[in-house]
Image 1 (tube, rainbow, N blue to C red):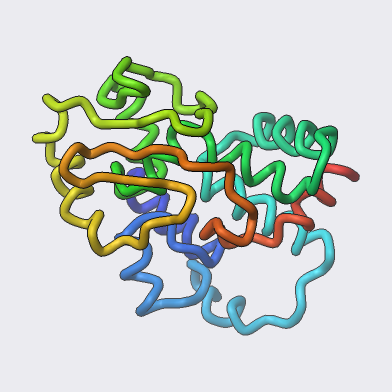
Image 2 (cartoon, helix red, strand yellow):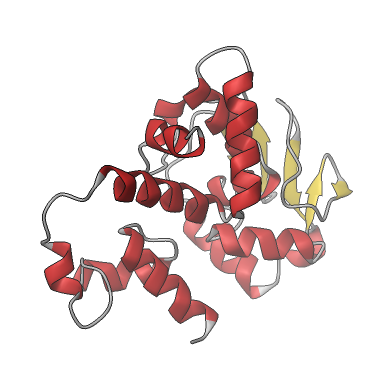
Length: 204
């Protein structure tokens, strides 16, 4: 199975579109993959464990984060002062790859990670190749000028206007850049997940 097909299959399993292709397919087939997928989509209430597991998998997939790393984020979110739900969201939303994706500099979280690793992304004018780097308020992310002519970034720029601007990000299509304005609250972030269930999962 190629990577695109696996992303579509994962999207259908989790009930969330992780890529534009998955979004189009799920509009036609809004149920899990497999021979009995449609029947599964109409199944009864899942157990508490399965609900917790599903929400954990959804959160990990939307941010393209490994199990161990997500567990570490949750641990830190619980230990910090304040609302742990807001804490985890702020840690995830200030990752470099997340900002690149949310601002529309990349079409998917996966493309954002690839662009960073391959050296196409700058932070405050300097190249950074670590997707998990945490940004601070007022730091500016941009695509290298020479890289803006590459097909993935051309497509991202074309779609940027149609994508809603999030209040905590200021962005520019002309310079393919974005600035983190402030740390967001959970209700401002377009993440599909019941985060308290994820926190409960890792707190067992």
